[in-house]
Amino acid sequence: MAKRKQRGTAGDKTICLPMAEGIDYAALVADRSAYRQYLDEQIEQHPELFPVDIQQGYRFHGLVRSLRQQLETRRIYLPSSHEAYQLRPDFVTPYMSETADVAGKALYLKQHGISYEGISYVLGRSEMHWVKLLQSLGRVSIVGSTVKREASLPPHLVADEKHTRWLKQRTYLAVTAAQGCLFGNHLSLSADNQGLKAAYGVFQQEAHDLDPDYQPMTVTTDGWDATRWAWEHLYSGIVWILCFLHEVIKVRDGCRSKPDLCYGLLKELWHIYHAKTKRQFAQRLRRFLEWVKLRDLPKPVKQRLLRLRNKSHFFQRAYDFPEAYRTSNQVDRPMNYLDRILYAMQGFHGTLQSAQKEVRAMALLWNFHPFCRKTRTLKEGCLCPFEQLNGFRYHDDWMRNLLIASSLNGRRPLSKLPHTN
Image: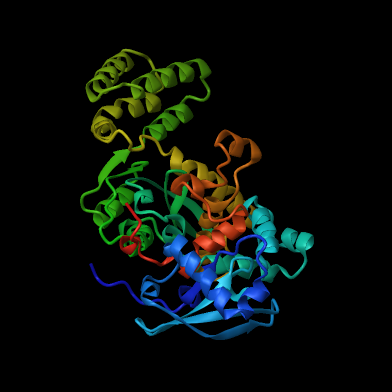
């Protein structure tokens, strides 16, 4: 595999330093000895937030003062790599544009579909201020910020495309999801083979930045040929599984005007789906199709059902991978969230680059947004999808949790972590 390209964004050289409650940050920055002691503790506790070469030693490299926040931050220099890094506390956002407390409120509103005008009305400042705040998160690696353990890299994926608009042009949002999180969210100007391969390839590159040997076992899609082609050319050994739910939905949509027939057909289809083995699945499907041939059904519905015979093999592949996804629910749920936000925005109206940053930021908001109180109770206090995936959280505040996880823009390879399994 080719060596990944060097990125020049400032966030790649910015470490977001977790700040424990009750610490006087100004006093800590002023006291070099205390700051070094605290920094060493964080390196020991959370090595994934720091450059690999920091284990070989570092030295302080001056102070930087933010006029926006009236805040001083320290810089460190790593002699082994000849690189300098800024240490930003977790209570301010990248580029010191806002405090984490206010940013959390603004992005919580955005995650629930509130317009920038509405956020500006509630929290003040200009609409563009909040636009830039959201887009600043788009520079971060989605996979690198979300996955903090090698065991958390998903072996089974679900992928689908969301149709939206950029200016007056139809565009396609290539979405990759698994285990309750979004791992890829990239715009493509076309839904053909090469367009989708490039869009889904962003996920591949970010995953390989963390683990060059990463190879997903399966991907579940709705059957669009270009989607299947893209994944099979990105990962040569991947097994493609056809989503059963999409076939059920197509049948349901074809007989909405006949509710009794619709109910009966769907009941039989889900009975087939719940088969325990390949043999049982094939047997149930064969008997059902024999019954279909003898019935006077609407022609489009009957043709749709009879075509299931040729697709049976692609459904049965899931039985070889018990943990693989047999339906697209994993991607449909976050796509409903994306649909609400994009509908409220009426698509994208700026540059394609700004649109890409916004959709990437939306993926991070999904992965780190706090569950509602009822869900947190049911999940025994689990804060967000990120914690559900990794088994821990950095901070009880969801925004500070996101900022800490995106240290170094999430571009720290997992394969070199000494504590990973």
